[in-house]
Length: 279
Image 1 (cartoon, rainbow, N blue to C red):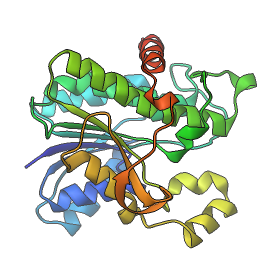
Image 2: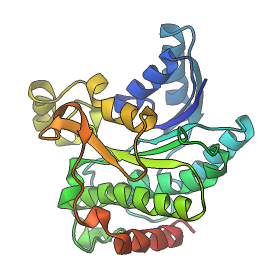
Image 3: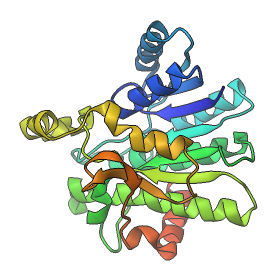
């Protein structure tokens, strides 16, 4: 039995992942933006799979104090974790800032996961099946060469900020993988993306997003295949996975990283700024 943490487990890809691991009889910590949403997801999974062991955890990822409280709850509830899936995200939202004054897409999509991962890293055993999975996006290819991680209102563009945050997911995997290897730790950090999948994250696109989901996107169940592969297959640390057909849909295959996503200098800069912004 594995112990699995999934962020954004109340809907979309996170909920599908929670169902998958619940069906396997694993203990799954459902980290959602509030306790009520987490409890609903846990009740639904328990009703569907008698062998499931879901545990609800509420935390608003736009507030690092709540993220740290969730990490403390995990440390109190278990002595071991096997898989962390950093899945939760927001896409192209109007300008807003987190409780700590950080641009919201960067705060939720990267910084919250940066903090959560570091706070519970010691719970992972030293074996190759231990896994940190960061969910990125095709949008990372549109990130700037020198991204501004925490833009102010005047410099903010919703799609540019989203692309930069998805680049940060890949750079975080690169930086963490190198740090673990340098410290002799046998824990793999893997990145993936779901291609074009019908989820609520596209709701901000209005009618266009709804139409695209209906006509072009693959189902959420198909969309989690790269995530499950990254979390459970014998894959290399810092590798990147997605759907094979134009990286939009289909079976899982190695995905293409931008040159920026493979920059150790940019990964080091992100790491330093993440430490500063997270206090």
